[in-house]
Image (cartoon, rainbow over all chains, first blue to last red; front, top):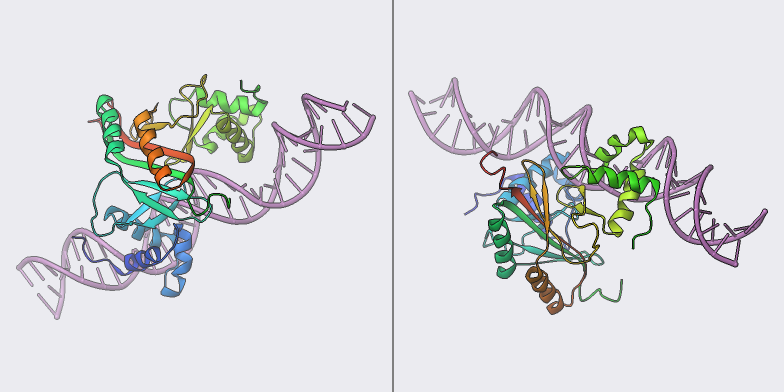
Length: 131
Length: 131
DNA sequence: AAGGATATGTAATGTCATAACATTCAAGCC
DNA sequence: GGCTTGAATGTTATGACATTACATATCCTT
């Protein structure tokens, strides 16, 4: 079980949970000015902890953050993201076969993986054609 | 066939080709001061073109760039990167099964992919144990 | 030679992230 | 209670990555 969240962690988590799309740290900060947050570090520190706990994911290709779509099972499987460049929405999924293939490669090359990023950018069903 | 490279593109390409590990745009810029480059944009513009041509890849999780390991066949398959966080070296590979699985997901969800990023960060065989 | 597309040069600015240091808060122990 | 210790917080400054806007030059085509 995750320990209870601190005040700043709670604020950041709520902001991300209520967002339709990924948010940058600075956007989160802007939305929390009224709650007393003033400096980027306050947000980055909270994001670090939340990411460690598996409640938040960082999207590397966007330099932004999303709430985990499966917040209850903070599993440590491989997660892939499909990111719509039009509406900004992100779908989160995992695939055992992909995981097995990548594991196979790393084993064969004596590579010890620490963190794997899979991000597909494009247009979601609703946005294809619009863009 | 790729058109011939321009002066700045050539400079940037040579810098990346001669590097052991990915370089940031600003590192490239620093290495090219003596060749007359002065502003980040000169590097970013060259990188954009080189990336379009498939000669250079951007590593999203590093905000850095590498020369393509297969510069002759500028294929457009799915490419994955294994990035050693100790020595910095990057291995580039592709896997048809992974590609098929991700394609399957996108088709099933009517998602039209534009660019896919797969980056495995960890430690390479030579560095495991050292870190 | 003229026009258009591409490449270049330069300054300024915007965006993302962390270092360094001081202070506060909560939990355990004497 | 008073003390220690570790985590979280607050604040300033700075570092690292990337783009906007505008001016100039180069090359190719007609």
